[in-house]
Amino acid sequence: MTRDLMYQEEIKESVKQAYSAISAGGGEEVAHRLYDQSELGEVPAGAIVWALGVGNPVRYAFIEGGETILDIGSGGGIDTILAAKRTGSNGKAIGLDILEEMGDRGRRHAVEADVSEWTEFIQGEMEAIPLESGLVDLVISNGVLNLSGRKSRTLAEIFRVLKPGGRLCVADLTVENDLPPEVANDPSAWAG
Amino acid sequence: MAERDFAKKLEKAGFTDVWIGGHRPFAIDDAALYPLFSEEVIDLMRQTVPRDHHDHVATGVIVKAGKPRDASG
Image (cartoon, rainbow over all chains, first blue to last red; front, side):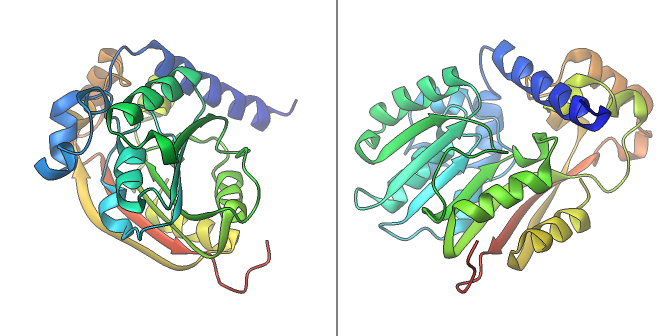
């Protein structure tokens, strides 16, 4: 295996381990920064506890009823559920997460939010999305694309699963100035 | 990843109409709210990032882009 591929695998493992190790997300303090009271009223308390995003992609996505939406890195399901509420029962919301336990949480929260009939959670990697090509109208994601060690591959996969005329709307962090190497090389910083 | 690199990667993947907005500063104190950042790395950030950058170590953005209607892939 080349050094680059090893590095990508190290990043993936670090991210998986970091997310597996936590017992909750950023909770209400994070959620209240990103979502308004009306939005938080649409999702169960458990999804709020697991809020780990950095923005509010659903607010910017202008979802129309009947759309098929993929949420990459769905975690506890807060954005998947908000998307499901907006697309309605004629549409479909799919949460994708690398961790099966996150999918379990998302499923439970979708049942509590009464959107489970048109919402599903699948396990898989964003670099190899386990969906057929041209399936979805909209891809959302919240603070997750930056976790990929293969961002170009991830974007190519998103492009593949979108229908022609489909769209991407993601929240993420950008960094214009390099972080100090002591920070940038810390696995915890990769996961965050 | 820098904003311009994000936009370039999107265009290289075939996306069009790339829009990046909703900018908001992300501080070390914001990072500390997330359990994914260990206390050690938060302390390391406070020690190594110049103090005048503590309130803005990264930028939260919304990125939008479209797949052309005539795209085949």
